[in-house]
Amino acid sequence: MAVLLRGRNKYEMYLVMKKNRQLQRYLPDTMMWSYENFLRMLSKYKSVVVKPNNGKQGQSIYFVDKTELNYAVYINKKRKVFENHLDVFKYIEKAAIKREFIIQQEVNLAKIGERRFDFRIIVQRETNELPWEVTGILARKGGKGYKVTNRRHHGIVLSLEDALKSMNVTDETKASKVKLVKKISLVAAETLGCSFPNQTIFGVDIGMNQNGSLYIFELNRWPLLGGFRSLEDKTQINRIMALKRKK
Ligand SMILES: Nc1ncnc2c1ncn2[C@@H]1O[C@H](COP(=O)(O)OP(=O)(O)O)[C@@H](O)[C@H]1O
Ligand SMILES: [Mg+2]
Image (cartoon, rainbow, N blue to C red; front, side, top):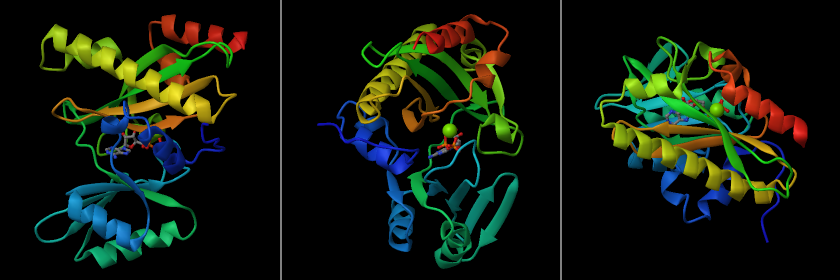
């Protein structure tokens, strides 16, 4: 029996996906926020991301980098330096006592120019008895000075074609990457669809690191569609809206 879930709890969704062997290698290592877990993650990864377990639109996301001398924490366009991990912990803990946070291994996102980018994929089913299908895919490029790619933080939406132009690999490699992004999104939606039986849409956030490996950041149960609406080609948004209306 599938574990039934409610709300937007990233960690619970992560645990459900982690049980699916097909998805395991596409999930960045994730733990709940605590001092012990923070130390554990920092000993495993050079950089980690701390974010609200129920966050949205790139709000309150801390990127922590361990350097030889100290720790740098990036929040939006701000950078703060700390001498040791306890000071970093105390700083983030001020926000984390008010709401639950998670710690995730940082994915060294591929870039377009100097800007990091990732993918947003829309997966839908007409009714909860029909199969899931991928109905939209686009790329989001972070705003200048930002590590998050959300539009809310000056991220810019690009068509998949435009994003792929900047990739320095063969057309075959690009095509197989896109196919894999869609496949992972579909399997993720199928998996979480069992935990949210009435869900008919997911917005999947997938990042690609500089070696081309893919990672699922999260699945959104109430994805904003403005990015798709803003694309010049309306094929995807029309299809997304048509399917939304059918349910
Ligand atoms: N582990 C990570 N590694 C690198 N970038 C990340 C990571 N987690 C989040 N980000 C960046 O921050 C953005 C927002 O994070 P996400 O997990 O999607 O939360 P939100 O619900 O706020 O959108 C992502 O789209 C990505 O650009
Ligand atoms: Mg997101």
